[in-house]
Image (tube, rainbow, N blue to C red; front, top):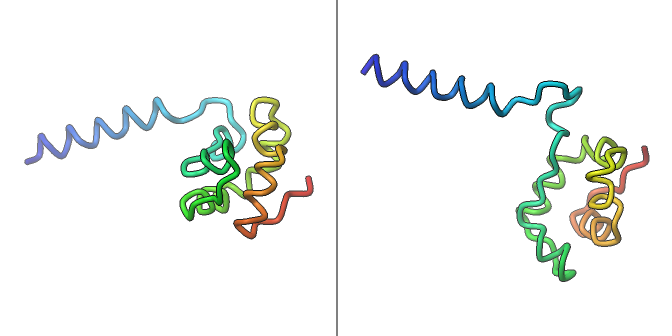
Length: 94
């Protein structure tokens, strides 16, 4: 039992250390999560509840995403604005 617990703790610590960003000021804003939003982005479908939940959780990161050239197009696109509006999330003013 003790060996199993120790092995689990070691596994978690090792994997978390590899996932943690090294030079990020706000680690929560180093990636954008669009799970459940793909049909809304690609086809203009209504966003799912999962999509709206992900957008609400990432709301504090929107200005960081807008400033990041990699993520900018995903946050400033007409589809992104429509998703935010549908989900009741105000578009950020940075």
